[in-house]
Image 1: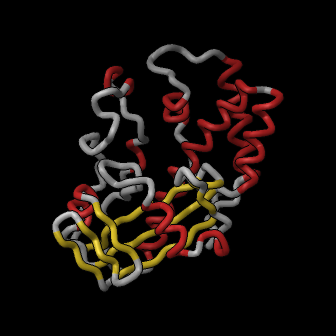
Image 2: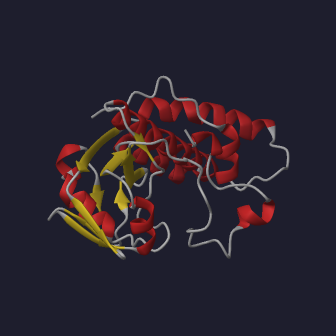
Length: 230
């Protein structure tokens, strides 16, 4: 399925965080490159997603059994999905055009490529949240936050199971390499629970693997866009 980016508004403060800016002023040239980069990326991005919902599942201690399709071992994910009436697994990508643009600029203008990469990170986050909204809007239900491989104790290896189960290579052109990383890189796989009652969408640092070595926490800011908690 295709996601339209027309109505998406990127958070420029979040882009600056990805670039390592704290409270210091941003020079006019960087601002100009960011503005131009946003337009370029929006033209190149072709976001697509695919998802599957499991009503038949079982959570036992630290294991999640999604019918006979996927078995996942994770205390943190099991805790995240407990009490849900259904479990959604989805994959979303900005497409190969964004990947090619960043790689091309890395050869001729590395500083611009770094800025484009930060913009793309913000864009894929916004697109992933729009995917969640589109899935939920099809039903009279609520969701909790998305939970991706690499969060907490959920291994990146789980991405291979997701890619295979959702057939992402054929459906949306999303592959996985030997290190369990997604290709194109500006892609996300994630789980969320479906509930009958409203759930909090406020994120937390508690399950992050970098909690004890995080430059954002030291600066008193968040690595994620708080405006996405919707």
